[in-house]
Amino acid sequence: MNKKEFTAALRKSLAVLGEKELQDIVNEYEQHIDMKMAEGLTEAEAIEDFGDFQELISEILEAYQVDADTETESPRTEESAGEQFIGGIRNTGAGLIGIIGNAAGWLIRSAKGLALWLWEILKMIGAWLSRALKWLWRQIRRPFVWLFARSRERDGEGETAAPEGPEQVGAEEGGCDGRPARGPSADTAYAEQPGETGYEALTGEPAGRGRSAGSAGRPEKREARASGAGFWRKLTGGIAAVVRGCVSICLSVIRWCWNAGCAGASLLIGIVGMFFLFALGMLAVLLLNGYPLAGLTICCLGAAVCLFALAAFALTLIWRKKQVNPNVPAPADSACVRAEGRSAERPYAPEIPVSAGETAWLAERSRAMGDPVPAGETARSADRSYEQGGPVPAGGTVRSAERPYAPEKEPRSAAGEKEAERHA
Amino acid sequence: MNAQFKKGVLELIVLESVRQKDMYGYELVEEVSKVVDVNEGTIYPLLKRLTNEKYFETYLRESTEGPPRKYYHLTVAGILYREQLEAEWVEFSERVGRFLEERKGE
Image (cartoon, rainbow over all chains, first blue to last red; front, side, top):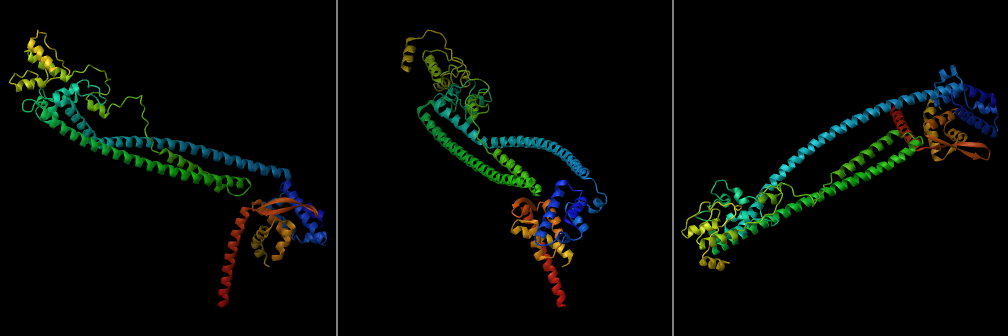
């Protein structure tokens, strides 16, 4: 067998392969024969070195994963075999793409449903946690709120109400911002029974005859009471400030630690994700070059996506501080509003405050001028009248700060005028 | 040498030969023939199969002695496959050798 016959037999036997592949194989064997001949062998000797021709054909077809027996027994034309091969690949590919598409669609739908379900559950858990935390916060805050309220009451009692008596608190006690309180004061709001002042309700001591509110007007008692109230006020204020500071510092430290942990974890996960992304790129290039790395590439892709998602999730866990908008009014349950004893919904409308000192002075002047004690006079004047042996007017101890004093218009004597000037 | 032995070890010899340096077909056949007496015709189908399985990649290089030659280069997958074959071969030969030694002792 010479070289031409060998190549012709080779082409005939390997007709199932594509033209390009066949030409490649023929070229290889021709080159081999040429080199053997260059070494001094003849064509026949060079071809004999390939061994048995049928075995050679079988091995070549095996290398292309073609069944040598069936293909050699029923050789087909090159084009039809190639077309069938390509068609088979196309059909298989289309089938695979269809299956993959369906599976992907189902997976996406399932993932979407699962994500929505998880989101709902998370929202429920979040709402429940929020409620629980709010309740816990209220429980924690309750003693402090009571403490602050008590301190504020003492402030009002010691600074403004003490000289004139607790009944003046309603008129004198202002809001947290120094504005006068509107409506019934915190003290009067505590009064549960008619005839009992807010002071009585709060302290449990009678404001009437035994220890009248007006009796606090005495200089020595006033000073003693003012100093005691100041001490307690300072003490409670200091404790409250310390507790508030400690809580604030603890919260800040916890917040910073938490945020640092979240940011650090997110950064680390992100770095690992970047590494996987880099590996994914490299593997994709190798995959395109024909290396069997599809599984590893998909794994890297999944890992990268998961890690980036995890990093983003860690970022969402960062504890942000609430921004306070100055244009938004204070919430309804603010301690300041509650201490004022008025509703937060009720807008603030400044009124002309009823001055307790003025009322007291007017009552005093009225008495000096021999006027009858009018209904609605202050408790102080009523008490003073009681101490001096005078009659206690009806409503002397229960007086609303909102009930203004209306002196009777009667001519005043010269002595009364003098007394008024002296008092002034 | 037994043909079955040769057939089993031929892949490893070819892979190892190409790992050292890129070779063309005839050069590779000569290299393998130094180790085992192999039918030259069987090397080409083997090279083709290994190329189809992405263990080799080929490129053409001009030659002064004739037409351009097709050179074979070992890929990363080929290197991994070679290492796997080597490990298997070492284990296999050790077991067989141990077995034979034990039999000799008896």
